[in-house]
Image (cartoon, rainbow, N blue to C red; front, side, top):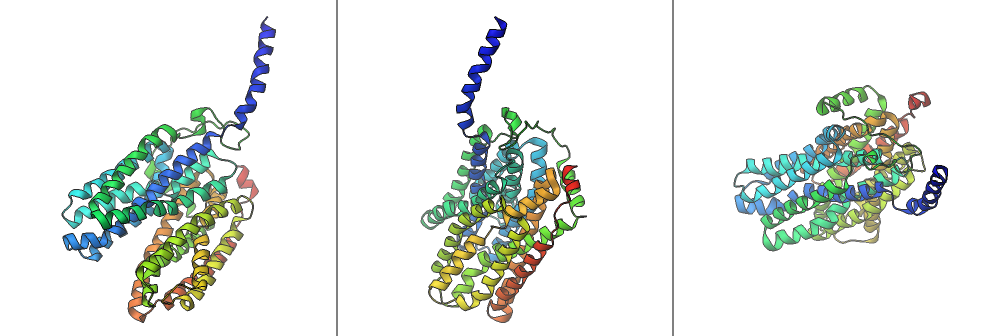
Length: 435
């Protein structure tokens, strides 16, 4: 009887498991929730730019004062990432992201009652900066590392594309709200959007595959959930100290700083005023930036697919080299109206905008293993520093030379240097990989 029952018990599950194998792995649901969350984080971080003119008109605050709050927001977005990755190792992804969304909601909602510039610094600069930074690309790296052993490049590409998608989805709506109803309803909309995501995060964003009794996607063996790592801030600094003693870290940080300088710091900040210098209407130039965002999604997902199949160092070298060449031609393309060569530049630059992220993530994983999300957080911080430097230096150059031509040429040269730096990054020795 016992033998018969055991045989019967073994038989049905074997046939019954076939449909189970066809079910979508839980990792893809986690990736979907992460995608939606990063979409929101990107939108929350970008919204302050819509408030510059309304706040200037209502309170009389200078654009420099308002810009300081936006700069604090951008700086914290980068500098928070490595500490947030360490906090996720200590308290779990779900708790950290839920708290971050709540902080964003508090910061955005509180602006409705502000009447002093320091409150803007506190709400949009500090609170929204900390909250959105906790859901930056280091968050995507943590999810990818824990839930996937296959398709990591593709998943990191999709999650990276979420930052562009957030601006495409939210900014047109929020700009319409600001234009029609003023900035306060837009701030409330951001707060409500952040709070609306919290239940989905809490219910669906599991910390580790072991929490639901599954293996990571593509894994051959079950991976037990690691114990919480105490001392999040200390660990983030310790990982930085350890990584800083290696050559690949500085090469990755240097290339990613140039990435930020040539995207957020250069094109996102100075393309519209540079185009306007050549007689192009501001609305037309802004629309071209939106087109960059559309192709950014396509390029980043494709880059993730390439990263799963080709050497990440060569991919980075190609991306930076092509970006540098395109910048050298940009001064010749600027004109009062949009023409086919300019559209070609916009499409290409969109495809290449953050295509650098999946191979950079892959190289962090290759060299730093389980610490790679934190290391990538520090590399991301260098991205934001590069963006901030060029955003400021580009304005100085425009004031000094009367045009942006020198800025485009210098940025093209920097991208060429980044291509060479990417090729210099060594492969990790096989002995270290197995240890």
